[in-house]
Length: 453
Image (cartoon, rainbow, N blue to C red):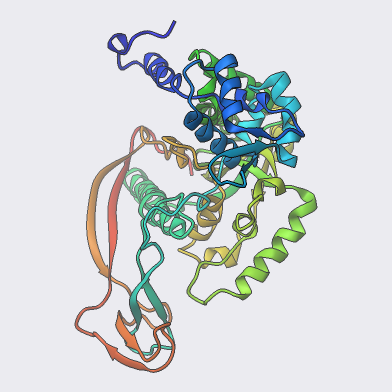
């Protein structure tokens, strides 16, 4: 029995029960779909009667309609208006009809929900000013060097207009300062110990993937943890986060066996199906051909997200990306003896990606474009010598720095052009008020014995 709210303390388990109690007030959409037979078209009022008989005695037609629109967003069930436009009818789409038998036999199948976790930039726009051009800026020495709009951004990772700003901030304000801080702290530690800074080998990009039998165990463990809360309805909201923690725990164990010393860790839930790889590349090229020069380029994954049914081009294939320090054991040794069935791949440096946001910035930017968006879960993690308990930030300062031209180093200043879209002749440039960028300066120290890097 769910405990009353007054009896709930701040422990994670009891908070879980409190959350379940709140969700009891809603209609489980996972059960609702089983009340609509494929091929039938049913009025919402009639469906509400079925809901009251089989699921929730107090449900209203408005409650049912809300649940129906959740189903429409999740699996594409169809909602129709009657000729008089004063009521609604519901029927299965091709996709939901295929899923109907699966729900009927196992409506708590975790695959259904895990495979609908979204990417950054695939949510809703909540600020009508998102993407609005507020003005223009250019190189104060030569406008042909650099000319960009000044754009309003909400900086939300869900926003289809502003998600790239969230990614850039995550890279420049959080990840890169930590990596650079670690390298500086390691050099300082070497200097104190040996009287010379020592060489710090650059971090390398790896992917580490569990075998299918391990993924199945993670799903089962996550599902059991969710069921313990006592209410299956909130599985769709809660399960991805629980599965994420299962994936991270097992991946950390795998990282321990690689021989690496520390890493930035970013999980992924999907890969593009092999049959669609070439199509995704072609689509990204077509989209990029139509873009203005200053807009972020599409990659394979972000190109697919422009399609309404982009999940159909993906397969559920959980893995982690790491930018890691240290020397890894040979792949054969890791895959055959240390972690049988697991696979790690050492990716070569991509000079084209490196041009974006520094030496590691392009890699990180690309990885974050198709990382999972899970409510109340931190996707960017740190392991080993980069973990908070091993690498402490002892100083953090915010400062303003002039934005400079990437071609000549001159200041970037507000400008007015003869055309509203930033084209045409330069009419005016405000040299007295150069564009300022917010930067965060951090200092880190290594706790304990420095790693042998």
